[in-house]
Amino acid sequence: MKKYKVIIIGSDFGGQCAAINLFKQGISDFIILERRDFVGGTCCQNSYPGAAVDVQSPLYSFSFKPYLWSQMYAEQSELEHYTRLIIDKYKLGEGYRKNKGPFP
Ligand SMILES: Cc1cc2nc3c(=O)[nH]c(=O)nc-3n(C[C@H](O)[C@H](O)[C@H](O)COP(=O)(O)OP(=O)(O)OC[C@H]3O[C@@H](n4cnc5c(N)ncnc54)[C@H](O)[C@@H]3O)c2cc1C
Image (cartoon, rainbow, N blue to C red; front, side, top):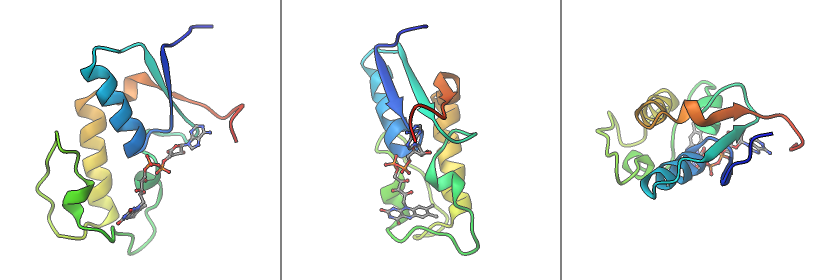
């Protein structure tokens, strides 16, 4: 079994930010474990009608990747779009592995 220097649990903003900061420190020997079938976390999972943020959209942007939001309180689809931009830009999908156990 391959060993990693760092294991990140979850691929939402917290996991993405951790991964990007590891890259910035020259650490690429890590893996992101995600229990869902896709990378992106809660903001990609919840697409129910009317889903939108309730804090101002710019607060959802990473400081290193500003984004011109279409409205002050973005709908879920735009939040997911931004998340995909981050995942693609930093190639986070390549360091991801679906994981169902032993975690709940
Ligand atoms: C439409 C929408 C609007 C929102 N608006 C706001 C808002 O305005 N303000 C606000 O503060 N928050 C809002 N949220 C909540 C927002 O989702 C969170 O701020 C954000 O998701 C937090 O990200 P996170 O990385 O901390 O954790 P999470 O989103 O909780 O992601 C955790 C990830 O880890 C994975 N995971 C968990 N446990 C395991 C395990 N044991 N093994 C493997 N993988 C695991 C999960 O599948 C998930 O992908 C909103 C959410 C949605 C869907």
